[in-house]
Image (cartoon, helix red, strand yellow):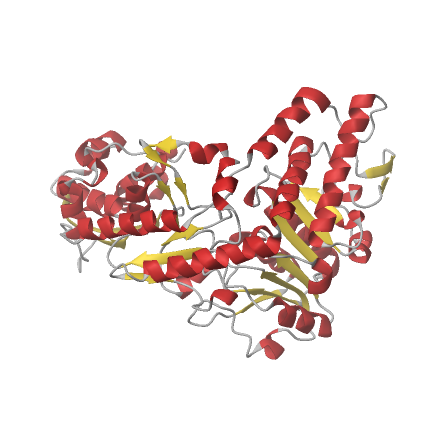
Length: 409
Length: 130
């Protein structure tokens, strides 16, 4: 029995009531973006109908209400990740921008030639490329933690990888390909023991796992609202002392205290990092998404996804010639299954499944180094969330069996 | 199961024509589709402005492989002048299936590689690249 009342949850998602190609929609691509419950959609709508005004400097009722709701959403994020202060929560465009903010602002101030930055083989391009840009600019060296054959990080050489030369360690909380959940505690404590800061890419982790930035002792942590029932808005968490010492990322309105023609001084946190009019409605509606997740309980979300993943791995193994990537231990992996099928390209799999109204993703999932390492040009990936059911996994498997038959005539 | 994978496409992708390498190639080029990782390498033997032979290697989906198979059949023996007239529409007509915006890139990758191989990369215009 599921820990979540999935049939009641499904009723909250208008898009899931839909038919595609005359068949009920089976959405198995939440690792790319999640669907949104009615109340999140309504929060956006309500904002524009009743509250819309620019924030922070309006004197009138509407502007004050918009500011209040925007800042209230920030506090919901703060509690959700257990940050010490709301000043440590910065709204960004997405997780990618949040990671770039750290690379640009912290990185360009603190990295010098000869320093080392350590990432991992599991990273999404958004947690690789900003560090490459930084390393190239500063003459620093980019190293990576390797993976084992199960697609989990191999930490046996961690002491030699993260050394006194290391200034930044940037790793994912959950791989979007193998699903591996790396032992962040070990990596972060090693980073801290050599005086490096730990940056966590929680784009996959935050929507699916209980998250406590203080327990984790992450220095920076980035995630995206749209992968966790919310609209398209991102968050950067950073420890206050680090954020205080960092120069601004983008310059413009709202991030300043005083502007003179030749120089300016900066606003307090978090506004120092929020130049220009932010995604106000999206931030507010993301607060509503967090309410929704809190009502379910993140431990229950995780338990539901572990059950589904367990079921999916068992069922997928019944398809001849199909190989699932990632750890076999469910406790070490998140709710997704990337796989390959012998002699059938993932694109063909995804295109054929689409005809059965089953949405999966095919490609390198913005994790090309990992695919190169496993010598795969692409994989197909089904990913799960709170609204997915064992019945949908059965449909996935039936369709995959049909694809198999079609290509093996 | 589907018109996207009609017999002809499956047949070409599973038993591609002109698959392999050319020991005496005069022109070659390789490129990949960054979205999905389809990869195609074309090797051509061009003599007096005529494509005397062409072979391809690569990994990719059924659409890209079938397109490469059919296109290499199509261009063999044609002059470089005639090759100029082989465009996006020719490929789509050849495949004869409806393709959405992402699969069109799979279908057109072999043509792009053929043109880059024959004329050099800068001759390929980006009209199909969005």
